[in-house]
Image 1: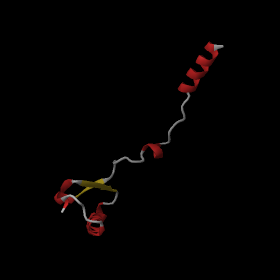
Image 2: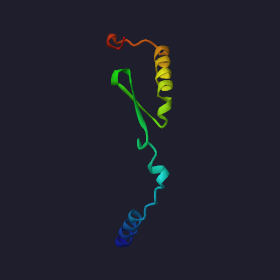
Image 3: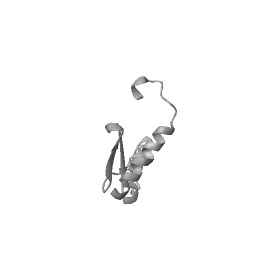
Image 4: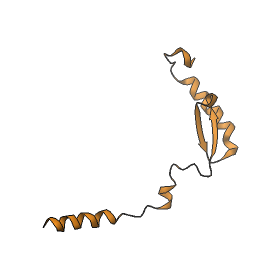
Length: 75
């Protein structure tokens, strides 16, 4: 009986579902361009290099809207 359970568990561990290529590319930075913001502290990867100026502007506007930090080094 124990051998049957062990064999069953081994069979389950070897039969994994195939992961689709779209799923594997999620989070991948292949074919993406880095946009370095905030003196190199923030990096955003975008797919369209033509939108780099727009991303920089949005980031600056968003940064100005945040609540002030308690740390003096962030001012």
